[in-house]
Length: 344
Ligand code: NAD
Ligand code: ZN
Image 1 (cartoon, rainbow, N blue to C red):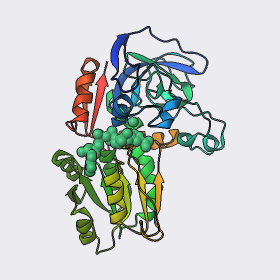
Image 2: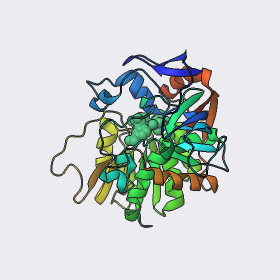
Image 3: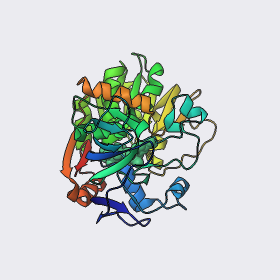
C-alpha cells in the first residue's frame, strides 16, 4: 500500500510503498476514507526537532503522517456494535486508559508518557490503511469518512477549547478567534451554535475572513496593529471575555493580552512556537491563560453528533492522496480555505 512516511527531522515526508499492517490485540485495521491535512504536520516536517520542541523527542522516526482519520473497519478486534465495513472516525487520543486523567474521561490529557497517536509518532492515515486501537473508534452514519476526518482534530481540538470557556461566554460578552484556518473556522461554527457571545474573527488573510463571516463571525478584522483599538471599540472599551489563539506566535499571543478583559481567558491552541514573557500587569486582573491539547474521545462523540445533525457545516475540500505534497505547499502558502482532506 502507499504511505506518506516521515523519516528525518526537517525533511518533508515521501509517499512510499509499504506492506499493509496487521492489527494486534485490541486493534483494528481501518481502510482510510479520508485524512485531514493539519498545520501541525508542517511544524513536524519543517520546524520541530527533538531539540527545538522537546515533546517531539518522544516520536520515533520513521512513521506515517496523518492524525485526522476516518474510514471503514476492515479487520481486527472489532468493537461490539460495529462490523467489517462500519464507517468510523479515529479519535486522536490514544490514551493509556488507566491514569487519573483517562479515568476522568480527559483522554487528551493522559498522564502516561510514551502513549503515541497515529500520525504523531505511530503510523497514521496518509495511507491506504492504518491500525487504530479499538477504543478510539467513534461510529459515523450520516456523513462520509472524507467529510468526517477533520472532525477528529480541527473539529475536536477547537470544540474542546470552546467548551471549556462556554460558562464565561454570557450573551453580553465577546469572544475573539485569532487564525481562521482549519481549527479556527470550526471554532466559529461551535461558538455560533453553542453561545450567544459576539464573535470577532482576526486573520491576516482576506479569504479566511470571508470564511469567518460566512460561518457567523459578527466582526472580521485584518490582523494588524489597529486590532486592540478596534476590539475595544466593539466591546464598549472592555475587551473580549475569551481570546482563542489558533496561531500561537509571539505577535498573536501578545495581541491576545491586549484585547482580553478582566476575569477573561486566553486559550492558546496554535503551536507556532511563540513566547510570552510574563509579569504583573501583562494580562488584565483575574485573567487566566491556558494551553490546550486536542479533545477527549467522549467530546468527539459530541462533535460527530453536531456534524451529523447538520448544525455545523465545515468547509472541507478533498484531494487525491498523490497530491499531498502540493496540498502541504498550498497550506504553507495560506492557499487552503477551511480544511483539506486527502483521499487514497
Ligand atoms: P491553518 O494553516 O489551517 O490556519 C492558520 C490560520 O492562521 C490561517 O488562516 C492564517 O492566515 C492565520 N494566521 C497566520 N498568521 C497569522 C497572524 N499573524 N495573525 C492572524 N492570523 C494568522 O492551521 P490549522 O491546521 O488550523 O492549525 C493552527 C495551529 O493549531 C497550528 O499551529 C497547529 O499546529 C495547531 N494545532 C494545535 C493543536 C492542539 O492540540 N493544541 C491541534 C491541532 C493543531
Ligand atoms: Zn492536528
